[in-house]
Length: 315
Image 1 (cartoon, rainbow, N blue to C red):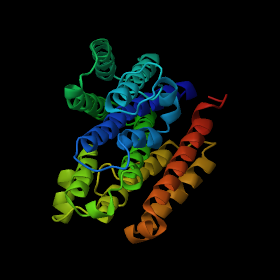
Image 2: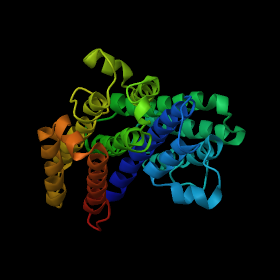
Image 3: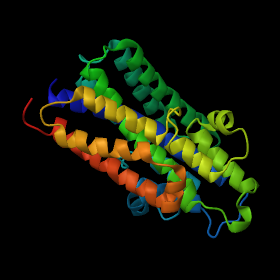
Image 4: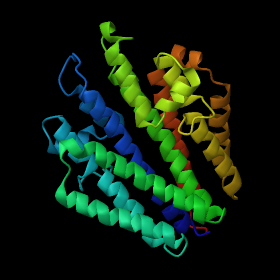
């Protein structure tokens, strides 16, 4: 496979997954902002969203107030924000167009129709009372594109690079969603274990489609440690960090290649660490510190994937 083709496939999948996960992070932040809670300063949850996404500087160049309306527009529809849902869907469609002969016609049609609908939504805008419907639409279109890929494509390197992009992006965003709640949106001591704390953790679980899974596995009160265990170390949880790392590890071994030794060795280290970790050690170390370290490892892995497969002059 040409490195340019693999590049387009990988970023097509990452961009669509990024759109979905941005919608998930916005959804959990929006739900938390609706709770009646005493916070040290207003709109702290929206600052948290921008901070954990690394987009606060870009936002502050164009907006003075960190409120729901400004942040939602910036993260969802702003053409000048490269990380917006609008631009993520645009990039997914453009990368798909570049490899239209490589993907199936069903996949191209799904991504193209998603982009056309996104143009309509952008023109009309999103009312605050309609943001949840918009988030659901983004998630559904992402699910559709993955489902079509899974149901129509050969299990060759085309399919593997699509899956690689999806799982690497998902690992990054699951860690960010968990960190939004735990590190920056910690309730006051009087709220720990109370109604506010419960609804915040419920919002986090629902944002990654894990609320029902949590109830099935643990059956009782929602606690930070159990949420962390579910989203970090449960092998049977679809969006957990360990599940994402497992898939990335498997796909890299299948793709392999003459220049992939360093990449596979780095992934082996992350894989081994995840499989020997316990949630008690994670919390003793510090959940925020653990997640920050994990995000750095994922970033470095993505950088190595770029230099190994896409930025070489060898085909």
